[in-house]
Image (tube, rainbow, N blue to C red; front, side, top):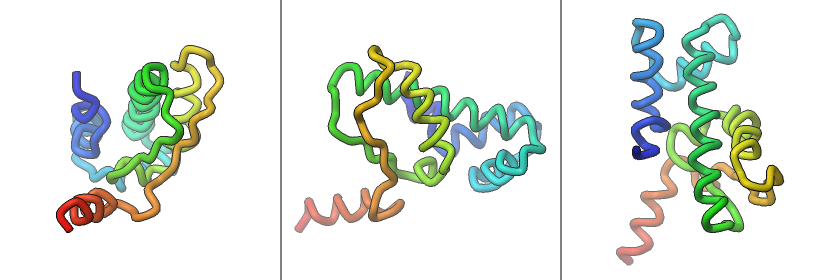
Length: 120
């Protein structure tokens, strides 16, 4: 399947709702997770980090990139750069991660800036 169907903000919000029976934004889910008092938020963020590791490991194992830049709203979740990277290390072939993973320097609008640069 497509990574977006599991790891996008809306997909994570739908998963949270299916587990908890309540609607919440990705930002709220992250706050619930950080408070360590919401099991559905814990399941949602653990799902994010697990599948992030699996998805990025496929690219790492096949293409051996020099760097990963994670954009979008999901890229703003700090646990992605700790537990998500641990999951990535678990899933890559050699268990040694040489690829740095960064947030985009231009924030969520990096894609818009890139598209504008292509037009000009």
